Image (cartoon, rainbow, N blue to C red; front, side, top):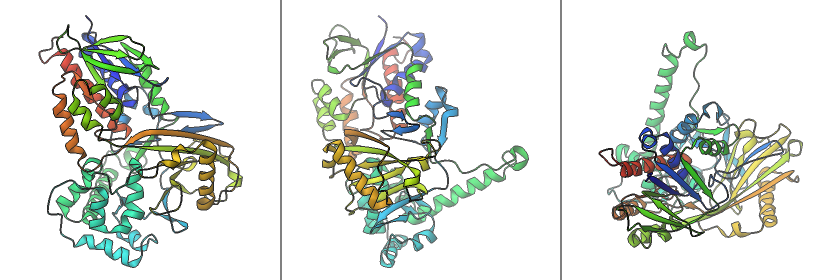
Length: 492
């Protein structure tokens, strides 16, 4: 019988896993095949790109974090290397606070200053609040190693104002979460490492910047990269990458690259049971009653979906999975005639300080952040609503949601014009949260799954919510399951 891997979930995690099987020479030599089961009528999960009126509209994530290489590497492997583009360099990010947009101080890392001058000059903090932040330079390091929240660590080191106006909007926005509820070890472990190694977060951030500047200088002055070699100096590495036609290109190209893979879209896995006729194998029942025999199963589904499927097999794991909370969000994208927008739109966008009466949590100035995402005569913006503790607005109808966002754009950017294009994308229970103790919960899940060899979990609910982390998790899970199918001795 041909070895068979069933992957439940056709988002980027499941696609990366299926691609890892396609790319594996050992899997190809042994004829291992995949079935990819996705409830939605399309693959890609939260990656959803639309092209309309000359605009590239990302309804889900719009970029890949360049410092985590797994997604960009996958793009290059499937032939999209020349389609990777950086965000426009040298553009500011703003913070909405007390009725106006303030430039985010230059040189912020995780909301921590790597340059003291811009922090001293910023209008986002009062003199007293700046002195409180500077106390980080002399405060002792934490005495224990227990997990704490991002908010707890940064409030302890830098004060409340830094969390509410700088770090909180930036870091919490990634998870649509409350920084006072997110585990620092699970979300930004570097912050815990900085305190352990340097005591002061500011000292650590300054040291990091000096090291990066020294490395950049070494590259610029080396013979291999000097003017005599290339005719120009290499610029700074981009922090974020996108694809020229949107991240949907990644989904399409990975899908087109799959071999020995059956895609079942519009189908749902309803039950997973052990196959009593074959050791260490499973029977996967779909919503139409069809049963798939599987030598291994990867659940790349939301934690709450995986919990229901694992309840009959490993109820202890199912119980832990149900403890992972999710938040609902929405994105409202609008295009305006440039002639009707007085704001200079001279940056990547803005985030909103905590305590603001605005409904939106952030706004991306898409046509300024990304080259060629809209015709020159249009300004394209995308606004985000919904976060932990503030999810009710996501359930409003489209007309109400658009009206609320337009009112906030009028307040923040002075845009009173009618949009020429409007799109609303809702993402119910789509953003997993990593509360304090998240890593301990993952350890409990790993221990419980030892009872079900050949069954694995991967995805945004576990070890990173960004696209690169999901690609990494899907790839690593596929390799583990291939080893289970093939066997350590190379036999099937």
